[in-house]
Image (tube, rainbow, N blue to C red):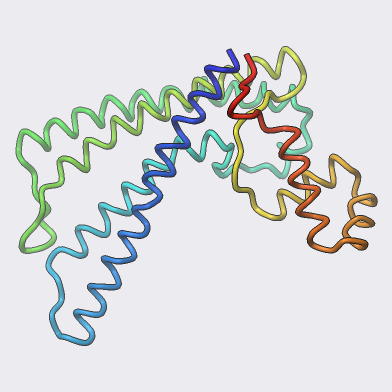
Length: 225
């Protein structure tokens, strides 16, 4: 089972990391348009349409990746004080009541929305030479499917946590520094971590967080089954 869960995590990761490069293209489009308009008095007719479609693509295609990293916004000022089993029960109810119904509605309506746009060969009405936008709208049901897969993974993890009392392992990569410090402090104790940082500075924090990540993150070459 763990092999399947980690496999879907990897799928979400690959999709998210590939489409993360759209931010580079988006930056290039905006810089080109600003330079052309500011210094050559030659504004483009396509930059606005291109920029909102690129941003929308980045935002949507990173959704499953963010969910796989437990990175979506939550009001965790109370949640973080729950024990893992209670957290899992809380998440389980939210997935059943809100997440899955919303994702199914998102996929179904998004599919009809995209098909209708394709049938009309819909073009943007914002700029004079409006590009076709139905390929962009077909991303909606695709994103819904990716979110549904990752949501199913998180649902299974909730069940596992309720049964065992501990959250199962998941893939991880980049974390905010404050999250790393909190995790290291929880694992080693705040006083022990502070003493270690006093002796070794930032390098000690990096070493501690790397050790913690290595102990928690499943190896890609030897996934748990």
